[in-house]
Image 1: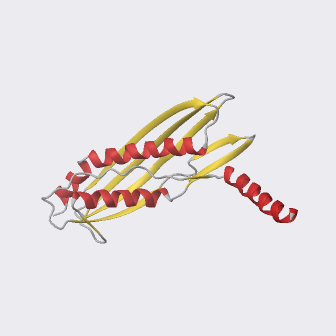
Image 2: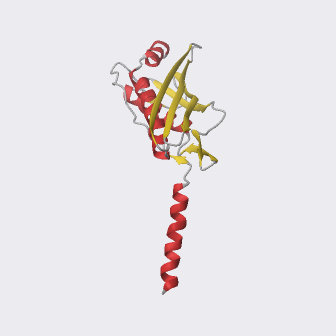
Image 3: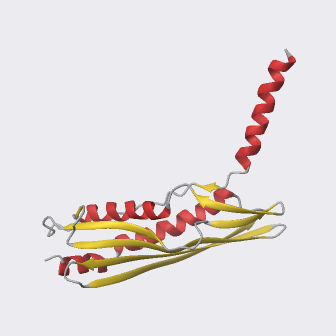
Amino acid sequence: MLKKLLFPLLAALILAGCASNNTTLNIQPKIQLPQQDPSLMGVTVSINGADQRSDQALAKVNRDGQLVTLTPSRDMRFLLQEVLEKQMTARGYMVGPNGAVDLQIVVNGLYADVTQGNVRYSITTKADISIIATAKNGNKQVKNYRQTYSVEGAFTATNDKITNAVNSTLSDVISDMAQDTSVHNFIKQNAR
């Protein structure tokens, strides 16, 4: 009888210990979509992503004397490529191969700098994303989107707090992309 109770309890404690050592941040930024442009008539764009960061980590945190590397739950290149596809579709473009304009969304930088003392923590997240538009006629445009977000609080910077900071920064970048019309105007001028 004691074995029947002790084994599940021990297994639950071991699993609880593993859960607290999670090194994956669940990145799910809010996706803002732009207004549709009714003047677009069947313009196709092709979209791909690239990650230029030398390190795929989103943060490195000192926990109990150990340097813990936190990584995203999804590949940032594919996440941002998916966002750009949704935004271009919302504007009225078709997305597919051999588009009139090739768009590449590039992750130049995305990192949460975390500092912790005995009673306070600070998280500063920086994002640097570029959209490179290349038309078939050879014209090219590079548009950069940069955001910084800082938060401070009491005690320790948990994974949830770091995740919220990264999601907030990415959401701001995505909002800037939705509101900015420079890439849209470039496509309209060069898609002929």
